[in-house]
Length: 408
RNA sequence: CCGGAGGUGGCAGAGUGGCCAAUUGCAUCAGACUGUAAAUCUGACGGGAUUUCCCUACGAAGGUUCGAAUCCUUCCCUCCGGA
Image (cartoon, rainbow, N blue to C red; front, side, top):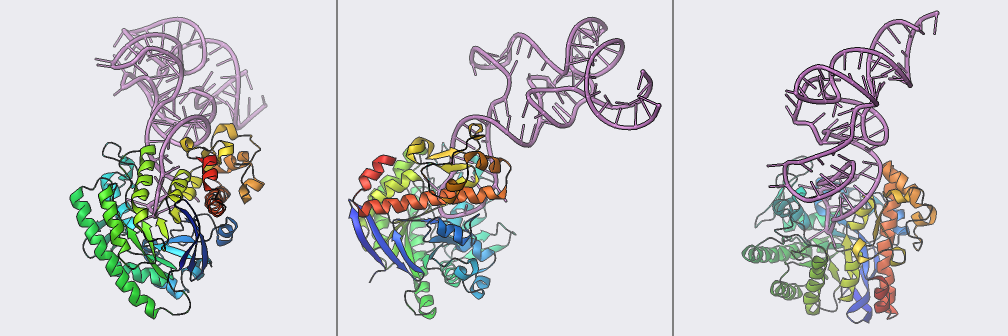
């Protein structure tokens, strides 16, 4: 029996409901990322007012600070941070990459190739290293050494009181060669199985009432059909409550990279069980949301809306100039907004757009006023969360194609 | 009026004989941001031609020198202290 139920479909797109220990989640859904026990600049009430149903927390960061045992002692992450809704926790697999291969290769998981490196990513020595046992980290906080094994990751996530845990995986870089990819994937399979075994034991002792924590498997891979198909078959063969699709997408920049995401999702989704929720790890730009939902994805998480907000990049809808080429964003710092009395997006009903002008936000941004970060983050989170919500409604009304046409 | 300090690119502020079209910060412009080492990072920023090129430039005008933002003279202006 699954915790997930599809309630409507349009083509491959689907609307569903996912039950968790902290309430139901209407899918498709966007999960704001709250790495360190907070979605930066927002409090739980802000999140709720933005329509947030579920957030993501991070194993690696919370383990290092303030420590999973402390959070457990404080009643779990929900209570600790005052968020009563569901929480999905990442396993630390991404940090194995962002503190390792990403620095080493000068690439990101999307759209970076040999000829398109970002040297600024190489900000220092490698701080993570992969072994069969797990991921060795040198703490970015104090230099101390840590070993994150699949078992340890599970223990931490269970201590946090996560509703949806992720297995530990190794995120492959677009520049990893076929030999490494093969080895890594086999190791990740072993890690996923170890995660699952530990999780199963842990959950049994962790309390029995209602729905307990659930474990999602991860579909790893690179931009290669054969690899992706094989991985899709592998996860499907395991006993997970949901499937998170991770790994790297493509070796080309920009539009081609976006196509690589679409392509990868297209290869993989038809091989996954209809009854399980499908989560696209780290995806969340406007164009990608449409493309992935259209291909059958149910859940998203992404740091982009929050980070963009902090960096002065605010979302705008198609009626106000938002399009693929500008990533549906404007730069609030532009001088043309100096005396612009209009809200960021007149069509947006978020708190920020209801109450403040572009001129004011621009001033706060340039002055580095703390209020800026909250107002900007409220707007971007509201915008993306509600975009996905409106997509869900469109699917239920069989208006998805129509809505998509208005946007993309 | 006397004494002192100073006038540098949109602003602030380095530079005190050649390596200076001029450090740096801010502002401006452009770009990046996709399981957060990011309230961050990259590039441009006098004009033009656009591989080492030319022109106009460091208050103004003269001068010294092979060569000046940098030294000298006069003038104009600002600030501080004293009448």
